[in-house]
Length: 252
Picture 1 (tube, one colour):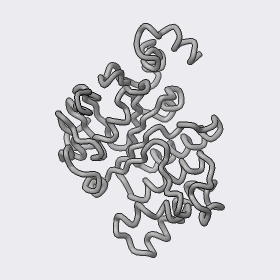
Picture 2 (cartoon, one colour; picture 1 turned 60 degrees about the vertical axis):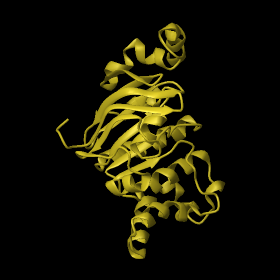
Picture 3 (cartoon, helix red, strand yellow; picture 1 turned 135 degrees about the vertical axis):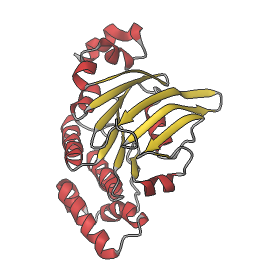
């Protein structure tokens, strides 16, 4: 990756008390790429996104975005730098309508009311399935529809880098397909995406490159085809090499 472009994570460590959740991981995301972080529960995938977005403070290493260090900045400062984080389990505000949920991140940019209205309509164009529910309370939507609202809300910040944490979590296969088609469209429009996924098949389907995390360590990286054909990526989901046979059976 060209110096000063995209995202660069350098020797990043994160601790929760005595527990070292990330152990000196390094990777890059070039502008316009979709990069997927893969691994089992507890591998450090969500912690990585939280460190990038300012929700966790690094214990060591550095995070550079567009050539500037963002390690140690708070989440509001990082949003202003052009990074938006869509956390796992969607976190829709139940007392707000779908439209109000989507507009929240636009409000953080201090956009004018006409700008917000226009941009919100653009989100409904991108996510036509949720347009009929624009005035419904967020909690009344299905899980897949809530995921679309959460991604639309993240895009309202006009990010140059979008962090997506487990967008397929708890969704039916047809809805997963729809959500990932939207991720592919987001990429086509030029937004860089760093995606966390446990579902390797769908996570790699939209990715330019992927990395595998295991117990806080980056163990493998490469192109989607190379990763999918490597037994190590399958073994990672069940906790290591000893689980290889079970992982292969699960993914077959």
